[in-house]
Length: 235
Image 1: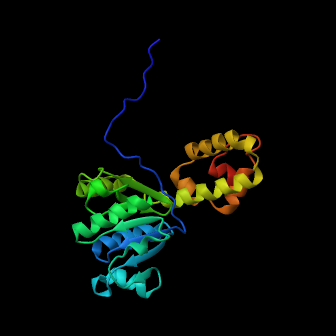
Image 2: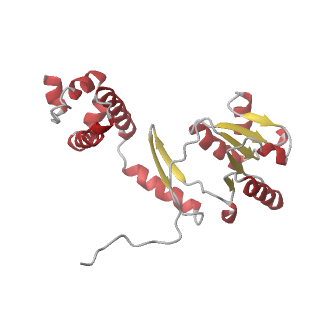
Image 3: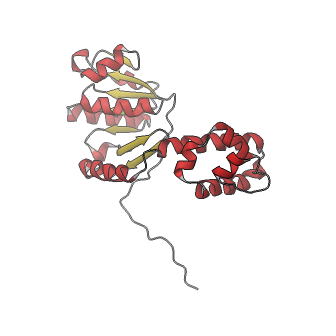
């Protein structure tokens, strides 16, 4: 019997959500591109150090330094700056210096991104839409950043305004569910029940759901039933 499996499409990237909370991210450069990289890292709760002469910091980077959001080394990059780095983001207008940073990162096996030089990148930055816990990234694998931005805007325009709030409530409900059904063997049932809630309840219902609604809804978990929001509140 013949079987049909997805066709392999070469040339893509492995798009993953990289958890860098409390990791040390070293940013080489302090201009506009570096500012964007820094914001991405801070949004992911990383510990950021920027190495750049103070005269090379743009207004945004200088602000983050003054507010203590990031650490600053006031000079040009030196190899010793890589000590303790978990990730390196290089954004300087000096191809030779950038390649030198890249080669040092390769030697030390530190993942790095060299801005605007795809061959010298372990990973790319896509165009990201953010709404609370929701993150949607569009990547063109380094071929067309502007196109990625256009696609991201098109996708964002189709999403409901309350999507982020509904996801936050679903996350809170999942946490409460794990507290009342913590055992590993409950895993499949938890997943099935939560999926049922997301499918049966509208985004508007999920957004309106209060903590009291969650507690009442969870009383139905054991039976496997999924009442509507109106039924939960009527009870």
